[in-house]
Amino acid sequence: MNASAEGVTPLIIAALARLADLPVAAVAEVVRTASSKGMLAVAWAGDFSAEDAVQLQLKVARVTPDTVIKPRAGGGFDSTEAELEWQLDMFKDMANGKPTHLI
Image 1 (cartoon, rainbow, N blue to C red):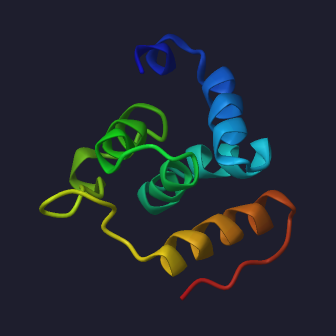
Image 2 (image 1 turned 45 degrees about the vertical axis):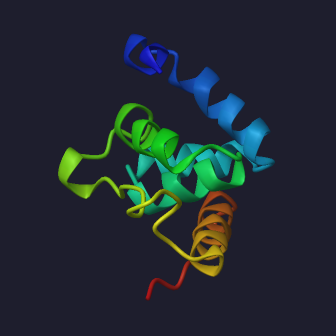
């Protein structure tokens, strides 16, 4: 995870996109917008643990520590599968230049 601090973020974005089976542009949007929910969804799609998702939020998406979504007590992602899929769809749409409808 230290590589992102050394300016290798494009490589990390591409690797995350590959692991999560997502378009690189969608993962780049997550990082560009510093979205904790978006990075949580990318981590979930890439089969990372909820604990790994915390580090991805902090070190790759560079979210502020007070906005990090932490694992549930006892482990696991603190979102439903539907919420995570919605986040992924929204960032795919953003990457394709489609308007998004935020709730």
